[in-house]
Amino acid sequence: MNFSLKTLAFATLITLLAVSACNSPREAPELNEFSGERAFEDLEYQLSLGPRLLGSEAHRQVREWLVESNEESGWKVEIQHLLIDGQEINNIIAKRENGQDSPWIIIGAHYDSRSNADNDPNVENHSQPVLGANDGASGVAVLLELARVIPNNLMGKIWLVYFDAEDNGNLPGGEWIVGSRAFVDSLEGKPDAVIVVDMIGDADLNIYMERFSDQALTEELWGKAATLGYENQFIPQQKYQIIDDHLPFIQAGIPAVDIIDFDYPFWHTVEDTIDKVSPESLEVVGDVVLAWLLGRFGITP
Image (cartoon, rainbow, N blue to C red; front, side, top):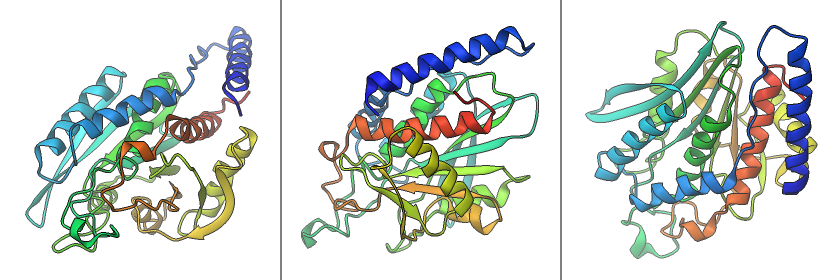
């Protein structure tokens, strides 16, 4: 869908909601478009800090910035402080809760980056850190823009969760998805749905259905993408099964989906840099997640 058609669609939706509000005691939500350009600015800022390695100054800076940014967007922010195997880990949870417990939706991404570029074709780079333009920064950028544009008066619960310690599996002393496992272990109650976005900034965006993900929820999201004209980016075929932050939710019986483009040749290399990602890809994913989310709260054009 081109930007002019997208603008028209949102204008139509806002008009319909305004008309509906005249016949309803509940105030219609104010809808804003997801901006890939704003999200890309958030991605750029993360990279300006350097690799966000556990325990590093950049990691601390990005954590403080995430708290501040979500609070500026009107979310209540909590930090889940953890000490796991001697490593300090901090999940950041931005909450918006209005009036009722359902629907309860969680949207997540990891904000750490990998300490070793062990997939780099040049073995001399294997000891170098990964900047993580796509693997880490892209998902965070989408969440931050969602924080700006999700209406603040939806009746139910929405949590945006920035997971820590996702990306050091298969390294000495490292594990995958440490932060999300601890988050799910401490979770009280069961969300209705969880969406994880990871590696979704690739300028050549090809998102296949991930095999561990909940099938019904996957079909909902890919169906929404098709209605928005993004069927070339959200490809309705299964291709990979991936250990990612959605997996602890699946194992706990909570419907969850991993939106990830794993056809990314720069994964865990020193070339995972800003020139490999685009604001257009961030916007495609943001549009789909936002439209799906609004549908879950009963808002459809």
